[in-house]
Length: 231
Image (cartoon, rainbow, N blue to C red; front, side, top):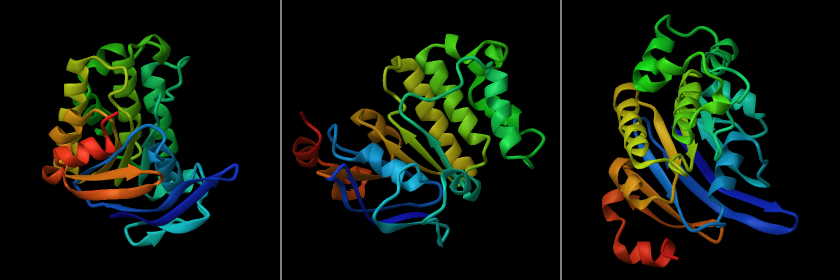
């Protein structure tokens, strides 16, 4: 469904991405992993169009998105939850969610109810402003807001960062549910190894701006972990 081929990107003369190639199939979680500073977040930003790669191609469903701005890529079926969540802190939970529906009209009547069933804590907080939510609640809101765009592929950047373990478990269960029930592909940037092993189907390991290893998550060996993840 989502294919990135040969992405090359430089910032202020420094080469950040060196021919990154990966793919995410429908109903699959692909974990993009690596140490800090190897280019994981930059890869996501190139895929969604927030950064413009010098070379390479990004396709969704066989259609190239090269040259398209982020909002057009979103309408083609990409949804992006950045590191830090970027919810609107002065808007209520309901208003944060309503913005997605306004910008992506034509959804099913029960669309909001479905998302709130996935994240029941948000039902109790619809009138609260996003800025007063805990980090875990904000992350759930950010993912819920992204799902209301009806994505074909969901891109998540460090969704477990700074979140308590029970909320991490809830988020993991929800991601597994939407990949199975809705067929959404998920590209996950994450450093929490146990989380990746619990929900991912495939892994990509990055090193120095390139994919150094990849395969089914069951083949993520301790040798690869020590070589590419252990600090």
